[in-house]
Length: 140
Image (cartoon, rainbow, N blue to C red; front, side, top):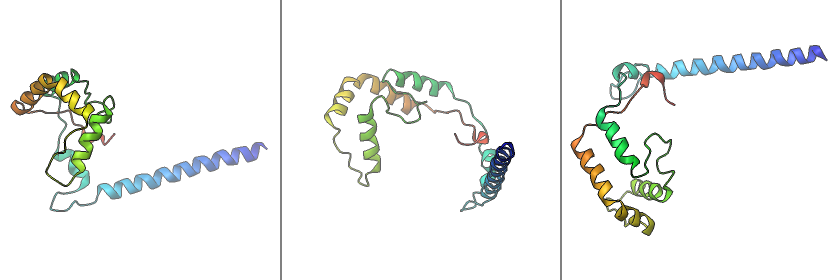
């Protein structure tokens, strides 16, 4: 019984090692691919776009947005306000340049937060935002 268990453990470790080696090989093949339009290799992207830090203007936008219950760090914006997120996503997906009227709950939110939204809009128009980027660390 112990021999069977030992062989099973060895087989699992060998399978894991084989899958890991295959994944590494595929990742290297992908990184060596050339992008179209003379953009170079996928592998070179982190060198072409060095790491950046968040600037004061972006930090201020984060503070202004938090007053609207918006968190730029969330994986998917709008978790706290799914109606707004759904409306924005639907409008972005539409092919028409015409913006549809928002649903009543979204219209109420926009009206109730008009002053705070105006401050955010003014900040966006007057600022050059820079967010933290770390392409050399890969995607999360």
